[in-house]
Length: 207
Ligand code: GDP
Image (cartoon, rainbow, N blue to C red; front, side, top):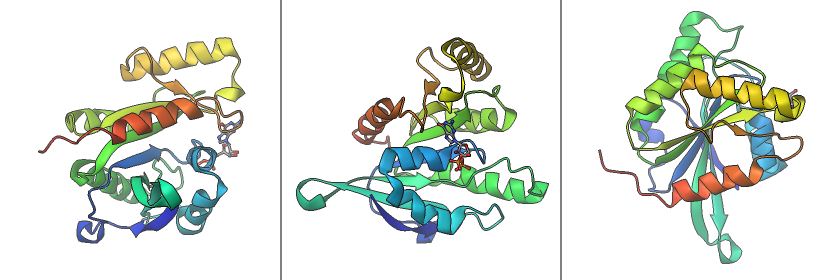
C-alpha cells in the first residue's frame, strides 16, 4: 500500500482513475488509525499521522493505493482515509464544514465501492453516525456500507453481544452488523478484508 496524496474540496484535483475505492470514516478517537495500521501495516498509516492528525478546517482526504500481482504490477484498489468528525474541541461551523466535505465525497465519488463506518463498540449509536448512515442510504446502491464496532477487546463476550445488539437496533442494521473488530487482537481483520475484496469486484451502477 502506498500513499498517493491528500485532497481537499476541489474535486478536479481528486485522482480520476477508475480504480475501486474503499473509504474509512469515524469520529475522532474511534480507532481508525489503529484499524488502518492493523489492516495495512505500520507504513501506510504513518504517512497519515503526519498529514492529518490535527483536527481542523483543513482536514484532508488521504488516498492510498493497494497494488498486487507480480511485482505489484496491478493496482487493485484504493483506500480513502476520510476526515474524522465529532471533535469536541471544534467550533460548530468547522464541524459543519467537515461534514459538508464528507457528504460531498460520498455523493460525488464515483469510484467509491465501500464505506467502512467505525463506531466504538462501547458506545451507543450516536446521532452524527446515524446522519452519515442515513445520507449513505439516500445515495442508493452506489456503494455498500460496512459498520465496524471497534475496540471489542475492551468488552467481555457478554457485554460485546449486548452492545453490538444495541448499536444494531439504534442504526437499524442487518443481523451480521456491526462487525466486531479489535486492532489489538486482530479480531475481524479477515472479515473486513473479505468485504473489501467483494466490494471491489462490484461495478458501481451509473448514476
Ligand atoms: P483515531 O483517532 O480514530 O485514529 O483513533 P486511534 O487509532 O488513534 O485510537 C484512539 C485510542 O484508542 C488509542 O489510545 C488507541 O490505542 C486505542 N485503540 C484503538 N483501537 C483499539 C482496539 O482495537 N483495542 C483497544 N484496546 N484500544 C484501541
